[in-house]
Amino acid sequence: MAVRRTLSLGLVVTSVALVSAMTSTAVAAAVPPPPPNPSDAELDQSRAVAKDKAGEVGRLTNQLAEAESRLMRLQAEVEAKLEDANKALVDLTAAEEAATKARSDADAARREASGADQAVGDARQQLDDFAAGSYKQGTTVGSLTAYLGAKSPEDLLERAHLLNAVSGSELDALEHMERARTQKANADSRARAALKVATQRQSEAEEAKRVADEATAAAQRAQQDQLARSQQLLADRTSFERQLEAAQAEVGGLESQRDRYQRWLAAKQREDEENARRAASGRPAAAPAAGSARTVIERALSQLGVEYAWGGGNGRGPTRGIRDGGVADSFGDYAKVGFDCSGLMIYAFAGVGVSLPHYSGYQASAGRQVPLSQMAPGDMLFWSTDGRIHHVALYIGDGQMVEAPYSGSVVRIAPVRYGGIVSYATRLI
Image (tube, rainbow, N blue to C red; front, side, top):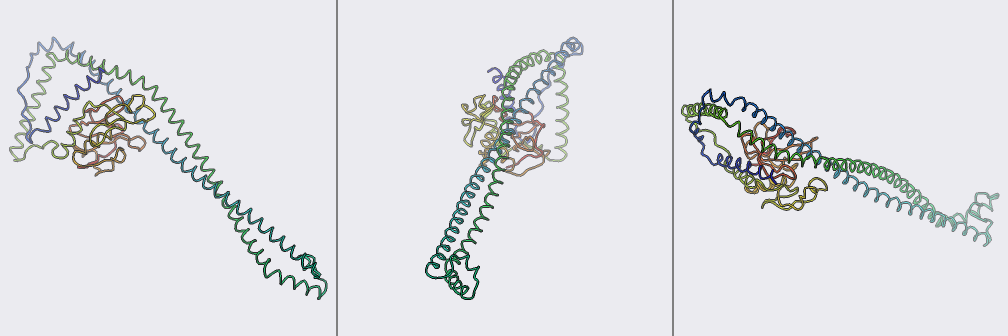
């Protein structure tokens, strides 16, 4: 599509300039010869037209920045909602498993308590049968309870013989059964209480899952609504870039030449001052990223223009994306071969033997965290929403970074965005 060709051209030009800067020596390159310096009369003749075009260029540039910001905010919100839905699903699964186990334990305790009741009833019946049998054999006791109603010493003695016979067997067994029944009844009560708690937690988890699903569905509907807007923004971006190029071409008249000449004078002055300082101190100018950091940056830059694919990328290069159930699917990421933000970092750092997980949140803690003000080429930068990290990019110096930004885009170089950025950079090398 047209926007990709335009972006790719700009990215290639920028990356060539960056790589050239990194391969330069420690001594800064000399300022080139001065550009043409038009006269004041020539400048006056073109100033009115140039002023109008410069204002238009500024307005278009602001619109491009706003469009990019809206796309990035949407991506952050979608990722946060998906994480909430994943957490609710995990909690619901755990609650269902706990409720199932509690229900099984309660059923087992209920069966054991019921069995104990039956055993005690059988034992009591055996005692009554024993007492009745004793009566038939000539004793004066018709049942065990008759023992308590003896009216004479002889009657009591005969009943005592029966009690002694019973206590040596059935009464002991009955006592044990009564105790077992009490224990099983207590276990049944505890199991039912645990089941009640587990059922309540399952109900709460189901409600949390329902709320999370509704929030996710709402976010996905918002994604679909925004998708049409995003596509229009991309079309507007293409139009704006063409208008910007045309405006810059018009502004690139005599006034632009004077501006370039003034910048040349300033650069020449800085070069002269720097050379004088180095001559006085004997110290060379600071060198750009080198060694391992340079290798990591060059590997990332080698993928400029490669398509974004959610879940794509490994240490060997771009891979086929995966489904996310939302925006990435609507862009067909699962059918593309490319990188997502963390996949690009995996590929870049694999060049120096560093293995990273395919999750930006874990990559943030994979190395030493330094204050953002101390970031250096080769450091990873992160962005978060509500404390959850959802994006990573590689800092390449001079306020620039290389990233795989979002579905529908490509690996690119962009200025560091400070909205939502985490307060530290992660340094691995």
